[in-house]
Each structure stands twice: as C-alpha cells, then as structure tokens.
Image (tube, rainbow, N blue to C red; front, top):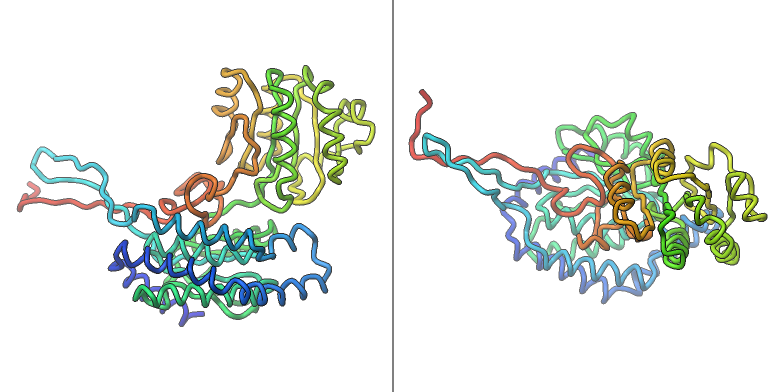
Length: 412
C-alpha cells in the first residue's frame, strides 16, 4: 500500500502537465474499449454475480453489482460526456488589481491523490477513474471484494486508455486484494493521500469516519423524502412518488418516506397505494395512513429514520408544509428531498428551508445522480458542508490556489 501511495503521488505530479487533449483522448479510448470488450467484462462480472448468489446476497445489492448492457452504455456515454467537457484545471477567476498594481486571482487545481473506497457497484471504477483523470488527479481505487473480478477487468480498460494517451499508468491504480487491512492503511496514509471518498453502506462509511486520518468527502445514508403538498397536481404527484421509490430500490436517491398533506391524503393515497402494492412495495404508515390504506402496517419511530434500499416505504400524513419540513429536519439525512406542488410560495419555502444537499420541486428524488445533473458522472454524493455538497463532479475534485503577478513591487 505504501508503494501504491508513493506511485500515486508521483503520478499526480506528472498529471499537472497533462493537457486537456491528452485527458480527452484517454477517456474516449476507455469508452471505445468498453464497447469492444463488453462480452469479456460481463463474463468477469458473472464470476462475481455467481459468488454473490451463492451467498444469498440481497436483490438490491445484486442489482448494484450487475454490469448490464444498460450500465455499460451509461458508462460509455458518461466517459464521452466527460471527455467533451471543458478542462477545469488551470482556469482563472477574474483578477483584481491592487492599489500597488499587482494582479490577484485564483487558479483551479487538482486536489492531488484521491482514494476511493466503494462497495458492490463496479461502474464506480470507471466513473471515479474518469472524473479523477479529467480533473488532473491521481486515483487509488479500492472496490468491494464482492466485485473484485469486475473491478480488475474494468481497471485494465482504464490502463489501456491511459496508455493510448501517453499518461502515467499509476494515475489510476485498482487495489487487487480483498484484504480489509488495505482499507485501514489507505485511510491513514496522510503523506500520500489527500482525500478519501467512500461509496458504500452505512457501516463502511461509519467505520471510515471513525478511523480515517485523511479528510473525507462523504454521505452516511440517503433517507430521502417526497412531500405531496395541499396544492399538488395529484396525478403528477402519484407518478413522481411511484417513480421515486420504484425506479431502483438500491440507489441512495430512492424515496424512503412519503409525506402527504392531510387535505389531499384521501384523494391521492388509495390509488397510489394500489400501485405500490401491485409492484410489491410494503407500506408502513401512521395511524391516519392505516385508516386510508387498510393494507399498511403500523410505522414505528425507527421506520422514519431508516434507509431501506428495499421495497418498503414509510408513509405519513402531515397537517402543513411546516410539519413536513420539521419531519425532514428530524429524520432526514441531508441527501435529497422533494416537494410536489403547483404553489410557487410553497415551492420556494421548501427549497429555502429544507437543509439537504439537493432539494427538488416536482421531481422524483431518484434524479440524485451526477449524470442526470449534467456532470457526466459523479464520484459520490456529499452531504458535507465544506468543500463539496451534492453530487461531486469535476469541479468538486479540484480546489483553488491564489496566483499573483507583479512587476517588482516591494511591500513597505
């Protein structure tokens, strides 16, 4: 691990000289190789899937692990989008001229060496490599043991792209051991690693938050809410809520709690409940919800704070938008929350007062994804308040340094 860190640090220095054209060439070569080697990648992925099924892994986690044609196509499109984006490195803010004539500005620069620790989702190997590469960083990638074959196969794709562009091979390194001790070292190597970005379950991120010495960009969980306001278009509300939960159960932007204003609860919940139940979603509701939906189980306090990542949904009727906002403040995770309403003042109040990294109006929470935001891909979603918040794309992987120019001025 120390050797990997030293090589990454050296590569990060070399990446400061990489041109935008080189980085774009590497990304496009990766996209072409993904397309050409689709069958081989899926064969490697099948080894991981077979092992996961033998361990009776949960369906949501199995879904995350799968390299489907759709997920490969999304990776290819993401690579091409990132390649076409402006190079964020070297850009200058508007300069100001001080009274003594010196010019003061800031330049956008890479963070340096980024360690990414992730579980289940092999597509993170490509997303993370692409974003770190485009933003001029070196990356050390440590995927979960359940996706080892897939990650190593994708790592070879990355290496071919780097070679095609004449960039250092150590700019992206995939750790090839499932040993958990590798994670313990990675998160404490302050001399070689500048930032850690974890993508995984709550237990992993909690462990890293407790043990890491390297700064982290993270979110702990995604307890996301949709609030159907008294002024909502009910058909639109039904479609949004249904999509927010059922698009994919295993994504961090999946709705886990549905809040409904009492004025529209009787009108919207019966039909919406039928849709959820027909789709296999278990409903857990407050006493009012149970009266409207006889099939709903009784929700406990624990349900309001749970990120299920499964076909389970907590439902609560509220008396006002203020109660909905208070519920989100009490139980939410600061990830993504949405209001469905036709009332502009309600929309503005919700977006102003809900303190989450993403706050929507008339959209399902499952849009919480860097690709959907136009970032090409994301390296993760941050609920931190410092440095980066929400989906972290290229700009979130850079920082600023001050650059001054003068003509021999001397401070007196």
